[in-house]
Image (tube, rainbow, N blue to C red):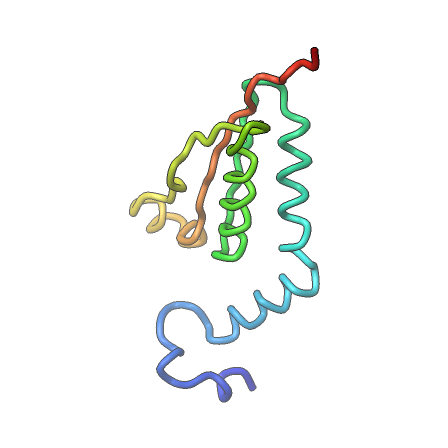
Amino acid sequence: VIRQAVPAAYRHGRLHCATRTFQALRIAVNRELEGLDAAIRDTADLLSSGGRLCVISFHSLEDRIVKQTLRSLSRGPQASLLLCTKKPLVPSETERRNNPRARSAKLRVAERLALRRSP
């Protein structure tokens, strides 16, 4: 059914044409994107000073949320994190060849700043 609905121009590459459709359904049904921002914020609050938060995303929508959340936690007078990676770390060509599932992985890292004490 999906193959018939997807135009031939979009059916190239190694992925089956239904892969993205089922990925989108899984993300929606499991509400994966809705909890990601909260999970990152909660985890950042649990870190000790100098602790590192490492997040691997495999989908562009996930990566956008990770990037925006880490950025918001690292800006302004109430910043609690320092971004360790300006751009995400991605797998090398060798890693992608040896592990095709890693092809879309992006790693972002942030470090917990010293906790501020109230006067």
